[in-house]
Length: 323
Image (tube, rainbow, N blue to C red):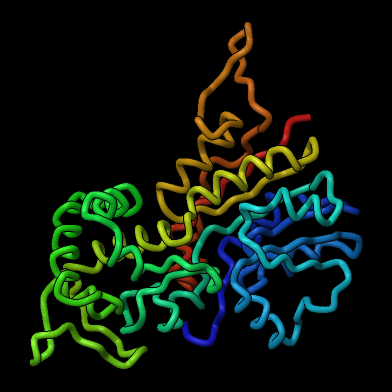
């Protein structure tokens, strides 16, 4: 869907999950195209909202929107990774919040902009940085990680059973020349070179013709590289702890997950209240947790998926801070 920055998944369900209250202070830690943030602010004229995004493209895109939030005195844009949630709330003098929303999906913009390097559909640089001021890129991982470290990342974050084989092939190929582009990584893993014997370099944005047999594994591979580049799971864990501590009693946390790794972390945290997922019980066998889980994994309707196929993998989890 070119020219669309992002379509918010399960919009009505997430807003309902937040149970927005008058004079409430809310946080959208994944601003993206702004769809969820705008819907939150529309729930009342006395709501205050802080929206996080580490990619300034999100803010630049907002400038171009006819219903832009820029200039709204009740809206605060925070250019930061959501792992720093607690620090920025301290900076703004916010002691407690009434609700937090996290849509952990990657914006359409990132997949559709070839130069960002998030998709194996197009030729382009192996980048994948959500924050373009960050230093580590996917090319750095491909070219500098030793074979064991590379195989480990592909196995843990991509759940690729052939991770060792893939890592071995990559390390062998990079000894001849650096692998800096998406089309080159494709060549290394499924074959194909230019007539000179070197890896191809195609114009950025050239659509790559990849056999459907390989697409599932490439999706896992790119997921693994993206998670490693952006330390997505580490950031998620830090944000969850901060959200737990910031939520006032009765406040809601609403999270959309898109793959099993992040969903497992969220599920266990909301159930137990700790990152280890350890269930503690009182003398009577009741679970001791700061949260009451209200939604255990709702999925998008068939009608929404028909309009927005990328919502197919979304899973909604909602919990309320116990009073």
